[in-house]
Length: 153
Image (cartoon, rainbow, N blue to C red; front, side, top):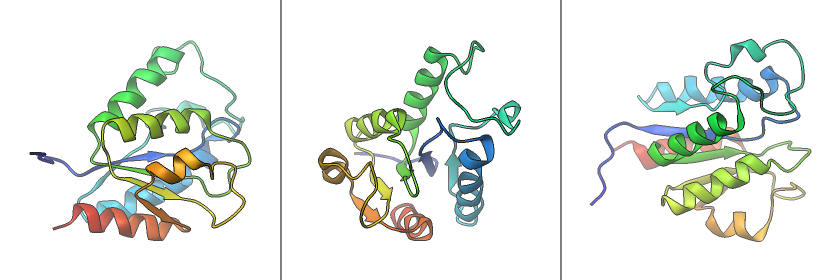
């Protein structure tokens, strides 16, 4: 039997190759929309406001939370403890390798997976992602609605 104590949604999507706002704008919007239903959006960009310097994020750094092990440990924990996995892949111009690993964790931990992706042409539109995606939609608003329908009783 599975018991969900908190309604947590992991907000997956590209980071590398984007600036801070490119990583966080859609996540902040999603968090605000989900909050209306007492659902908590969990962003991998939380506590990384120091990245808000208009520079493109290219890799990890030496800080404890942003070194390779820190990023990996927290992301795995977040995916493991969330209720639902929501990935926004809209407009991606490079494959997000980290997000693809997070998909694997979400599937292994049997999380409902919602993929927000264009109908055609997205670099992430691959067989394994299609197969483990439980809900495929082409707008963030639709993705958030699926989250609500899964978590609200």
